[in-house]
Length: 519
Ligand code: NAD
Figure 1: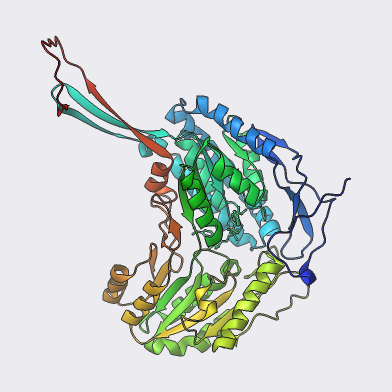
Figure 2: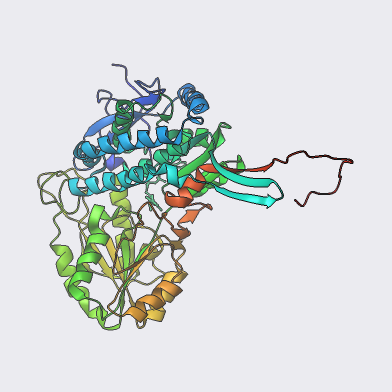
């Protein structure tokens, strides 16, 4: 086999360079309903985060391949836009059944490529599947509005119509859920879709494409291209792509939002987060500590809705030893090993970044009663493991507080009162999620009313809304107008056409009226 030049992603220390493979299997493109070998000259090695062995090589799609994907989507859209709502609904009904059937297979792929535990990977699929299930009610969801007799003999109706070819750009941390937030909503509203999965774990998307073929999805309705910045630029610049759904980091999200909007596209951009949980001393201690540890260290902290900061109010500051004790019990190992609670982080570079931020916190004055930086997992000596880590006495001016760490690190901040806790959270630029733990209804109500964050949990640590609602992160965590899934997602993928009709019997006009009609 020919040697293929290596593409380096984010700067990686030389010492951390992993073996490059030109023999590992390749990830295919999915264009016009067919899996195709890419003609790319540049490839990205994808490593199992638990072992750093190469799992597959992901192509940087060529311009010709990406053009073919858009052309295929354009062609498919021409007939799909006329499809009946029942046809679209039936496609989704069939799709949800096969995703549910294959949930373990999808989860195994996610664990292999992304590292999270098998149980957590099933949750990843399940949260996406719930969106597919929701789209099965398209007949009701797509109802427009109508009003009879808005003037004499005149009626008005509005329709929700598709946009055309839409695109989705996905992050690494939810390889099934995020693509499933995107293309099912696009399809059920009558659009075609181009998906660019994360180059770090496209496998789940590819398995879902096999399922689309199995259920008879018309070729070209969904196409998958691979790559990184060039593929993203292609999507932002292509005039046939009308809307972009993005989920990922701030840097990429702001770039894509600005570039996409400048090219006249709709963009919804879900970005980074710093989610705070406020713990009042009247909270149920055991349940709260359980929830905190699950939300901080689950998925190795690589969730946009992970709790990364606990704000302990008053007497709750005495709970730190109990939080540490609970976190210590979590088992760190490869995601497929039974009993694992915390898997590896995505890459050696991500691990180094996490370690650096923890170190900077300690240097700036934080204490570290639980330090997972030097953890070793005997069976997986080459994995990107970071054990649960707790930093206390963290101040909002510290680097480790300002940056999204995206690892299994819980920063603890102290506050004297609920008002002070609310002030701290509202001063943070992000607005993805937050939670309060309390048994006092009026404190909870005050928090809900005064907090400036788009998704709020009351005794619920990860308040990700189900798909009858929308995912409503706010402020620095979201750029755009219409959020993902739910009613807002439907509106994102549709444009409104309003039809005004006059049907009058025996109309006799003696002279044309030239005034503005007011009905
Ligand atoms: P990322 O931004 O590195 O990658 C996301 C996508 O953008 C990928 O497809 C990648 O190819 C592309 N990309 C990356 N850098 C780019 C650049 N400079 N220019 C153009 N395109 C680029 O994000 P990630 O590391 O895969 O995901 C983790 C991030 O995603 C975290 O910040 C997390 O908070 C965020 N996230 C947010 C949500 C949410 O709903 N708010 C959900 C999941 C993840």
